[in-house]
Length: 199
Image: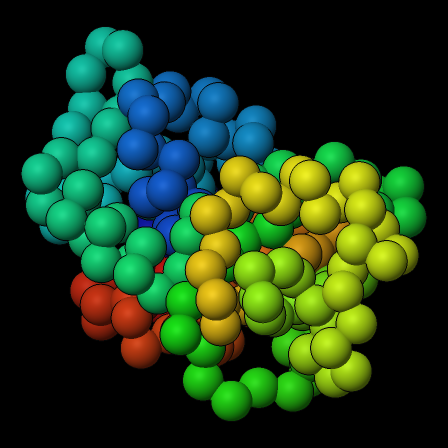
């Protein structure tokens, strides 16, 4: 067998998706490594693989999506958005994203998925009548967390969309657990060539 020396770079599908959304704006490898709390070797390998697929361009200023990468991210955005910071929930950094045209789901199962992926907690909301509500009982989020509702306005969620909010010990885990929930619901939106990167 042909064993390669050195540590095997580790990244997940959630890391790959996070990087694609991050590269909508030119970003350096060091920043990616810090934001996602990934080793520089893992980031280098992931960027090399994305580049080999013709999805990103690399220059002295950093890495950014190429034309094919922009098309891919725009297709992903039809299924779910990139994450946005929404301050803190229960004292932990929190991120949110929107899942469009969600299939059937059980909030408790999605919350468990987020927690399995290192989140401290998660909230799954449905946009109904133009505002985020708890799907189980239709209770509006503004009744309990009005300050959070304002922060969600940047997501541009539409009627029937899901809003996933996750919080964790650090921003990287909060971000990745939100992407994990989106992938649990909309994994079929991700092309096989991207899924194969993290295997």
